[in-house]
Structure formats: C-alpha cells, structure tokens
Image 1: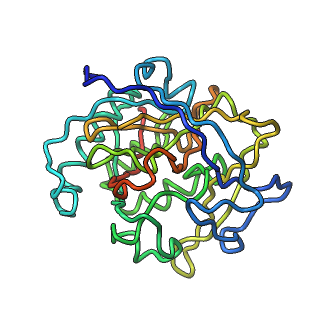
Image 2: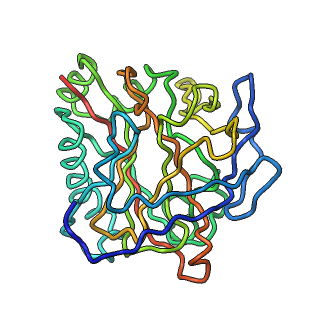
Length: 292
C-alpha cells in the first residue's frame, strides 16, 4: 500500500454479536435478528487490533483477508450512479482481485452502499438498494459456505456470456470474495475481519436458505460465527482511519481449501472512541474469481 500520513495505532474492545454453539444446521428464516451495537446473551467482548503498518503480515490465502490499494477514478457521488458503479467500479475491483489472487478472470456481480447508523429490515431485498437503510453488519458471518458449491455456477451461469460460463464450468478452481472500502475516511463502526488461523472449524455455524423462483429453487449457505471457546481466542483486525483508496478483500468460499484463508469471518464493531462521529459511508461488492 502507498505511504500515508502517520496515523497512531488504535486497538479497542467491543461486543461481538456471536451465536451460541450449535450441532444442527440453522435455517435462515428461523434466525433471531441481531441489532448492531446492542449486545445480547450470546455476545462477547473482544479485542480488535489495528493492523495499520502491519498490512503486509497478512495474506488472503493464509489469513482470509488482505488490505490493499485501490485508486478509483470515481468521486463519492459516482457511487450512487448504478451505471457508473457497474461499468467502471466493478472493473476496477476486478483488476485488484486478479492482482492479489492470480486468477485468470474476476467477475464482480453485486454491490451495496451503506450510510445508515442501523440497518432497517435486512431481510427485505428492496432495502439493499437504499444506502439510507443499510448500516453496519449486525453479526459475525461469512457470506458463503463450503457446502452447495455446485449451486453458484448454476444460479449465476444463466446471466453470463457462454464463453465465460464455459470457462467457469471447466475451471481448475474458482472462489468467491467480498471487497469492502469506505467512500470517505472512516472512524466510526469500522468493518473488522477475523484471522482465519484463529477460528476452529466448529466455530463456523452453517446456515441454509432457499433462493430462486418456484420450480427453480436452489439451496445456498453461509456461516454464522459461534462464541469462541476461550476469551479473545478469535483475533479480530481493522484499519484505523481507513481511507477511500484502501480496500479489504476477504474470502467467501473456494474450491481449493488447503489453507484456512478460503473463508473469512467479518462484521462491524462499535469503536468506543468515535461513537459520536458521523455514520460511516461504504461500498461492498461480491466477486467470482476463476482459474482456467
């Protein structure tokens, strides 16, 4: 990453809205809603480490995330222009994903802007397009799971050009990633990511949900995160005063699972030093990476 103005490191403690350990798979529609900044009986206080100045000590493959540079051509107002985001920003993020992963093709396919202090009815898909209704993530999770992997090419393949779909179908490897960055330098309620080395397999709680129209239903999954077995066993990180040219890419799922970084737990956390600052403003995209 490029040199920046000196920023003093700032670790902090915050409640994480974990879930209690489960032996059975969870159903998405049966989950009890969590509210950001309001702990419940399953929440635990965790230390969140500032990794500024230590970014190169973490890798996508080993730790599940990487903070890197993205110099976008857009201004803040451009991120509310759907056409610009899809035609320009998607390509910019795709190039960064190709650079950090070494994949042959990166397809960015979805985004959400967030500028609210709290999310309003996250279960309503209509709210995904309204930044004023999208706030920080309420609970630690992974966006995808290692199960039902065959559903993603089928679900997304119909909307892809045939050469790309054929490349995906015949690929030696493919993976899903998230990519998050602030639209302005942020202090309040940062995105935090967990070092995948610090989580056990049993800490990932599989959740299933049905998507798609009647007659063409698919089962998809993701993970919620259970309370750690010991206090602060999970190692959480963020970037203090993360700037608009600093993006974090984190693992969602991967057909290659020989290293722990194929998935990355993430959420938002209340930084007690900045609770009165303006709500953060950010954009997150999802991406498929394909290796021939």
